[in-house]
Length: 285
Image (cartoon, rainbow, N blue to C red; front, side):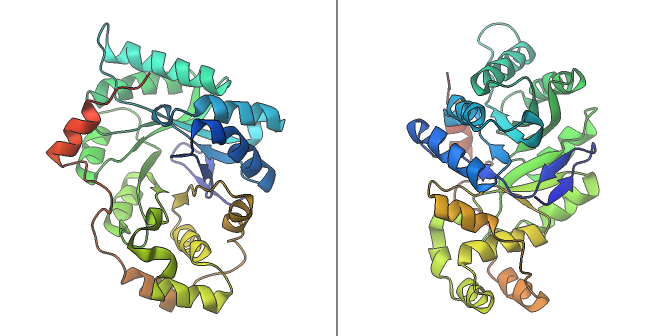
């Protein structure tokens, strides 16, 4: 599997398997199928409610721990008692227990909300203790990312953000490269929005290469050195999504895909007060 080198030297697979919106009851079978297909990079989150199922699949696979790259995410810590830093450590320990692992490869702050400075300080400590190989963030816009970098010791290794042909994040990626942060895409297929799988530009490129639109999108991200974590519960699609390292998009094709960028989210804006209120009020067990 092709990898990128994070800012602390850790190797991260460019292509992984995400479990967002896979029901807990279906997650173990899906992850077992993904591992059997050849995936070694898994992405979950405490808020997805399926960490234990991911852990069960890892255990059932018999794959050596050092062959896997496992990511999970920290939800907003509200600290009803004690401190956010203490609650962050407890949340980490709970995630690690549900996954059945001794350490994480990557731990992300899931949302740029609440007292994420205290969360980050706790995560820095976890990193120093060797409990997580790399720490990063998710859904951080450039202003908040730069502010976090400038006022803390460890630069986030990764920022996982919405990135797909209709929201390409080129300027964000340029800034992240300057700051040593790896861009990781969530929602690479825009969850099917804007008729992505029948888009004329993407369909024509797919036909030219004898590939699917999904494979073209994944190849486009990989050629941009964007880490990507597609999701599927169908083994044949899992295998197809892995089969993207045997062709290359031309500069002309990359230029055509660039014209699809709307520069706006297809889902939600983390700077929208209503969305901030909804996310901030959400509690997980």
